[in-house]
Image (cartoon, rainbow, N blue to C red; front, side, top):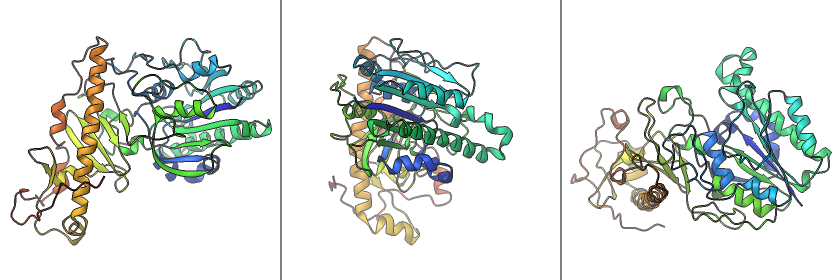
Length: 444
């Protein structure tokens, strides 16, 4: 039987992996040997939510709770590691915890599984992994918290500023990846072990506001949810796969790699990425039953991503971003449009605008038509997902008072619009100078 190792890159987004590439040689080597999902979007912006969604292969697990802390999984599907344990695997979770006085508590790790093993000592961690890989088949989840902003404090005395500290933490995490790979190779286990390497979320270092000081757990902008996912397995040719992938797809894909027939029963479960993909990836920051946090200036937000755009909805309204052109999600493209009576985007009229903008939008009507078509497609799918979450809460008799109001899908998030335009206020979309674009084009 094939073994499984899941390497959790704490707080490492694709942007961070790229920015600190020189300190990630072992991680990048492993990715070069793997199938890399270059359009992978994490299902949430906080570690506990991501871990829960991975283990249970769906993002509804915590939605009946009105608060994040203390929320427990609904167990819509069986825990991945429970399935593996029942199939004959030795299932374990090991964690490098920089704060040994604060033991890890993880409701997603079922009481039917061995207790989480944790340490703040690297030699102890590697000795434990060496011990766990002596007998197979094994399934091991390796969670290295050193790259978490709080745990990286351990490196502050030897760092010069915050950037250096984060870079050093990334280097330490990469060293762990290299050591684990080398250990498997030394023991002749490398080619009989499926290795899944993924990032749980990114860190938004206050680029979207202070947020009470939070840098993750905030709204699911692309820089928060675009994280690495790579699967090294002898059955997979090393390649970059541009298909959409999500956290909830990891468990079904692992079971497929291991030849275990245990398809998730819950209707909103992830898919086996070896057999097919979904047209969208969904992300969120809070549970569906959780209220906004005005004291932190964080709104409960749901996101949907396709290969071109990310659409967010919250109590503030809608925001849409071209995530490949704007990976930081700073230009809400809907500020260029108004919503007509049918809820479709209509491009505003602009006077005395630069040739750059004319070439992008006015002289190229396909751009506006493509966005308008994608907007309707994404909005309808996201609204259906949010409705399903509301029905899920109600169906379980939980408090649905804070479920997102459908009216939020009918308005554009106004935040940042004044700063975006500055002194260049757009004219009315009904201005006579506005070209008559045909927004009925169906480019999909």
